[in-house]
Image (cartoon, rainbow, N blue to C red; front, top):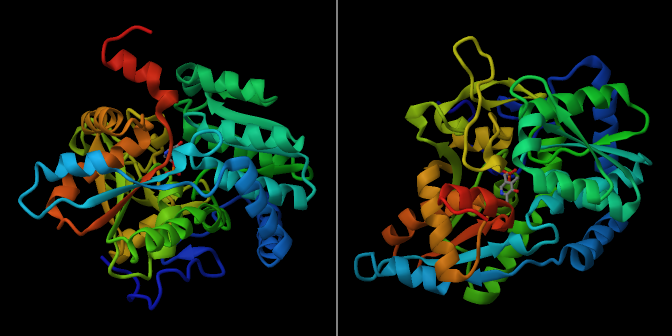
Length: 413
Ligand SMILES: *Cc1c(COP(=O)(O)O)cnc(C)c1O
């Protein structure tokens, strides 16, 4: 069902109330409203200030290590061509966000929000985290700028992700285990929102993905768009034209929005988002909000969610803690309904195959999150002509996943 007429541009959203069609918005307690309006104004001012842009670029270059390379994955390309009919098999490129400081794309967004917090004079930063990648990126930037950092993390995730908990503490952050609900990411986000309303004067809430109330989904997207802007320029330099397709994994959807957004109005570019299908969407044990969920309200915005029959938020399941979120950014929900982006899903088993293949063929151990998208590259690439240029967003490196994968393969470390 399409609720809006096709727009002239897919890049104009959100509207002044933070809506992408019927999605997004700001469904928050009255007490939070002044904070959100403050943030919206501060972000608008920063966007118009050349010195903010200059700071983003300077720290982006010297601290994060941007631009990240666009890399031709030659052996993977050849491997998949060998399985394709003659003349077929796309040329595959990796956008290498795993080479960023702290090992994933998360830091692009955190840098933007921390520079904004400094402009606003907020000395205390709070964040939610699931697998711990956003928590580590936030703790890192807080250490760099001498800000107090408090990270909310579900108690279950604290257990599962011990190395990242230690990392955050090394960086000087306080990690608070959250005991409510399922004691995972959604509960950590609830707790962080509660903290924010009680500490209005000195606290900045640094959200880790394109979710939450307006202006977060648009702001986080803007900070991550450096991925797509660089990709466009790099592909023009390497191949003299735009890519034919883009593909990225989706937890909340920030690495995907960052790659996709600059290309949304290039209508010839096919765009694919890949959700986590866990044990399979039919099994009920998955994190595929678009494929297996329906619209509702969570964490201040309307979007597709995993819910039970009573409308209670259901548990998400994925092999990858970073995709284990029962919702999806509202702009993705809108792009799904507009038909501009095609959303697929990958199971745990398909993901592990892709994880192995990438390691063996390219000498790159990917995080389990982008391995979901890679498994769909393995399906799609052989169906495309040989001149088709396909870009995978390699959102993070696999070091954090080594203990878990070793256990699955029955190895002890
Ligand atoms: C957190 C994370 C994701 C999922 O988050 P998005 O907001 O959907 O990008 C994907 N990949 C990696 C490496 C992550 O750390």
